[in-house]
Length: 337
Image (cartoon, rainbow, N blue to C red; front, side, top):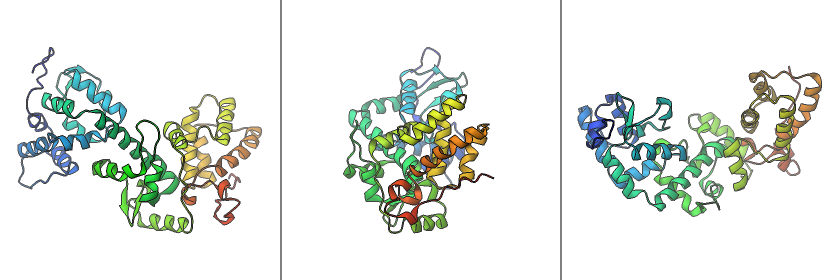
């Protein structure tokens, strides 16, 4: 139908998709797992994409990859054909969604009505819960697996993803949700019975190095509350030594974005970077220390380091290992040069 601002959203999906560049159509078909032929022209590719997307189970799988912000955006445009949004407001992490959401030359955005109809048919509470479960698992893989483990046995990853909050997730549910998530949204892979984070995907040498680090160590399964803190703030917000660091920064350098700065520090420490590289975060923020400030900061940073979960320690902190495995501690020299 035509909206009040002249948007026609009533054509079949392929009539809109075909207007995209052929390279985009080929990439989208590849991401969606659609078989193509070298001889396929744009119209043929567009029809194949439409036929795939309009299968309920395929659209459901695509929707699993949308964040809360993205699903809100999709629903806004679907419910208000012709809505005017700024280009920067229309953002989807995965480009396949630009085969569902279109903007005409007058800057009016819309979702084809047949897609909206199908979405309304499949958008039940079961799908909504599964999408939220998938988003939790993807976030744990991206922000927890990557920095605290590098890789871990799939069985332990399933335990790591357990969740009591709504929607809850049991370890037994995780494999099925992982299987349902489209491959283009998986920034991890399975190998040797393990799940590997993105930091190890392309480097065999790094994978073997982390395997050596992990030898003889058990993975620490982080609590749900701690995972939530790291996902929200980028670091263990309520941990005592991180709290001390935050208060110190707010006292002496309140002009900086404290959470963002500590998040950057946390990631570098978790990945085992040397102290000089960790302290470079302060330099990047333009922070200069007086001698007194530095004297105060060094013991705080040492305590933060010793209470940070690390990739080399299978998610344990050096403090947790200190009484059992002193040889596994990562030294944190503070001789700045």
